[in-house]
Amino acid sequence: MGKYQLIRILGQGRSGTVYLAKHLELDAYRAIKQVPRSSVCYEQFRREALLLKRLRHPCIPIVYDLEEDSQYSYLMEEFLEGDSLYDLVQARGPLNQDAVIRYGIQICGLVQYLHSAETIPILYLDLQPRNLLVCHGQVKLLDFDHSDTLTAANAAAERYGTEGFAAPEQREGGYLDVRTDVYQIGAVLSYMAAGEARKEGLSTPVPGELGAIIRRCLNHDVRMRYASAEEVGEALGNLHSNTECLRQSRSPSLTIILSAARPGAGVTHIAIGLAVWLNRHGYPALYEEHNRSGDVRAMGERLGIPADSYGIHTIMKLPMKPRYGKAVRLSESRYPFVVKDYGAELPEAARAAASNREAGGKTVLLAVCGGKWWDGPELAGIMEKLREMNAAQPAERLARQQDGVLFLFNHAVSGALRGPSLRDRARFRQAPYFPDPFHPDQKAESFYEAVMAGYLKEEGRKGRWDLFTERRIPWRSRGSSA
Image (cartoon, helix red, strand yellow):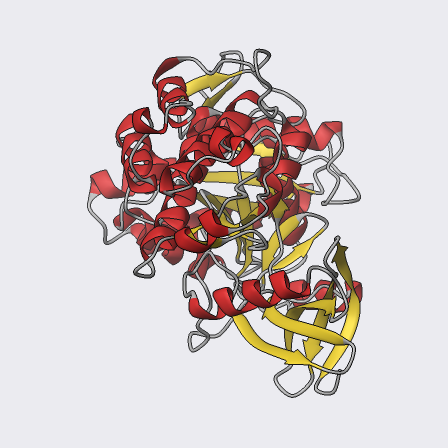
């Protein structure tokens, strides 16, 4: 492959094989789709490649090059990591309404871009969960095999579509236009909300206003559907325009900052475990390394997992972002929950927490302390540092910041939490020992539930309080919300 080194196969389909490859000169990763020139799908592949080269959208993979040799054609694309909507629903079941709306609005924006990017609308024609990748909170549109201009799509001798998602006019030989893709948007919304593909007469109905939007998209009479993907997106936005996830701000719904006064307190272990726990319970969370350990890059190199265009390594299904310098410019990810590991840099962590609160962000600072009886002075020192940093602030602001600090005792022994300085027991938690932060055991599960109780749900009540939908959801070992 000349300037590319093939690493492994990412996937295989009827038209060809997709490889993960490394550009040797740029030290960057690419996805390379290889299709035999003798394949019956060759001309379709060429049309897809030429179409993708014309499109520029953050949620459509970047096409870098198209090359050929005597046997194959190669399409060099942006390498993306994530779960398809199909895999997401298969693993978690039906998504909650907020997740359906969040992803739905992004899908509508993507489809509307295709319809308006050129003079003649480009129809996607195969919108279905396997072709939609959730990559760090962004929905990416893949596999443009069946996409074509409106004129060419109606002139084609054959038509394609996926059962449960294809519009009636695709199956029955009717006229195709932008409302054909609107039908498929409705089918994808239904899949996310119901947890299964639609079947005539057997589909699970979606209740409420969301169900009404879906039913209008799925009307067999094209004249009764929304006139455009943009209209569907506006209807979804109006449905929950006041929820946190749909505000124009891209700031997280909750930022969790962890730090300690000295090295060796176990901050990284607890931070990774917390990020894993949040994701397992339906709170999409990103782990960010703000210490100088270099652990995330070391894990990525050891496991052969490269960083993607967001600068994120996905390690054991946990998105992890190494510490980068201020000059580095990366694609922006969207995570409603961010866990920031500051290691032993407590003053920097406290300043970051204060700055985030000043900007209006919901923030909690978790100060990790040693749990041995001889670590008492360490806790007193941490509290004194925080008091000194906040001494010049107005009393009401200081009160808010102190309420947002929780002390975690790690490596604790019996009797370590005694003492006159620990009057407010609600602000102190004892961390259990669990060997693998990527696989928290039952004791760790209970610990993280107690730590996050005041931030994700109301104390003393069954279930968790969802910050997005502002409603209570029963606890499960693996949440069904995205």
